[in-house]
Image (cartoon, rainbow, N blue to C red; front, top):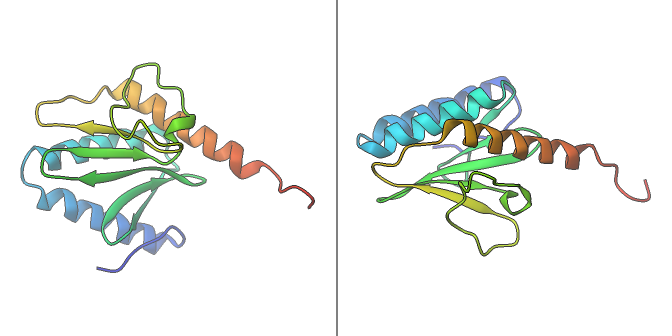
Length: 140
């Protein structure tokens, strides 16, 4: 499979198709969990772009990476690229807590997603990305 990055609308459509395929391949609870997380992320902001990176990882972006959606045998993991810089009043982050930048949410079989809390986290990540994207470089 070709890696897809943001850019042309066709590339985004290809990435979305690859994410559709990943969800369809996961015939157990992980497919439903990833599909639900994807819906919440996309509903949080209509300008979210889906990409496909690192040889098969769904990525959601707006002015930079919001989060990735990895699947493992026992977890669906949403890793927020700048999660350490985000407020998490609902306590969604439960993995990768020791890093300087990333934070993750591991969902396991039987878990439910707190959609309002995840929506707010996604919007906070977008706001942070947009703030950093609009800063002008020093000396320029």
